[in-house]
Amino acid sequence: MALKLDNRLISNRFLRSNKYHPEWVIAGASSGANTLWLIEWLTTGLAMRPGMRVLDLGCGRAMSSIFLRREFGVQVWATDLWFSPSENLRRIFDAGVDDGVYPIHADARSLPFATDFFDAIISIDSFPYYGTDDHYLNYLARFLKPGGAIGIAGAGLMSELEGPIPDSLKAWWEPSMWCLHSAAWWRRHWERTGILDIELADSMPEGWQLWLEWQAIVAPENYVEIHAVESDQGSCLGYVRVIGRRRPHAKLDEPITVLPPKYIRQPLLRPS
Image 1 (cartoon, helix red, strand yellow):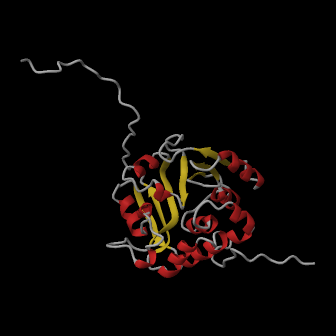
Image 2 (cartoon, rainbow, N blue to C red; image 1 turned 120 degrees about the vertical axis):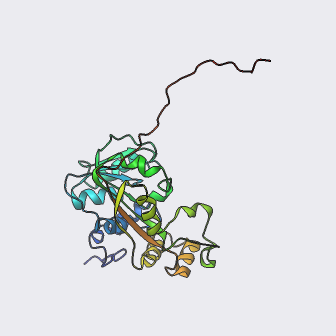
Image 3 (cartoon, rainbow, N blue to C red; image 1 turned 180 degrees about the horizontal axis):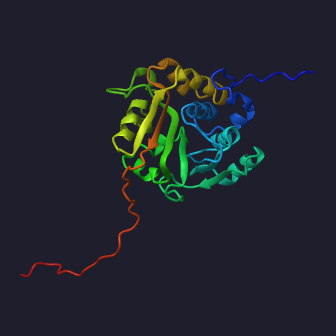
């Protein structure tokens, strides 16, 4: 008796992702987006070569790290603060990629890596949580070799929101969502530092429909978000990606980790 084909998460836009079992993809969900769709979309604009060292920042359950290793033969440091590296190691081992994916527990603002170590840094549906800080790109870029690339993809805005929140989003929107930005905003945010040459900054065509499809499968009870995305129809919400390459001669400020003690006793009060 032939097995019934499970067509969930099949898309003619993501042929690499189609190979992965939907139960495995759903079990590894760690954000409001299909990680495999986003990493496949990002890598169409970001060349991956076997043996490259890649930092997967905010990797969640390491799905994107496993995908990168299996599909492109790169070495990946799967780094996350919230998700257990021990759990990720089991997932990595079961996927047969423990020879090239290394789970790391670390804060994005306190990374344990050497300067100029990585050929590429990627972040899937995670970067807005920390990357909007004006100082952050200068901090992160030092772990990237000159000429190496940084690429991000995830939920974002089609254009920056000016004025009140649209009625279609009011029930779902909360203050923390102001970290969401448009591709154009990210381009300006990175470009003005002089650290990166921006190679790509765009939004996914009809990305809101894939957002809905994913939510309907992994969280069908999430009525508020589903209603918001459905009502918005891609006017405000969707997926964005940005890719920049570190300029070889970009000047990076040295991080301040500790100031040397320099106390000299001085008179406390003026003489009377």
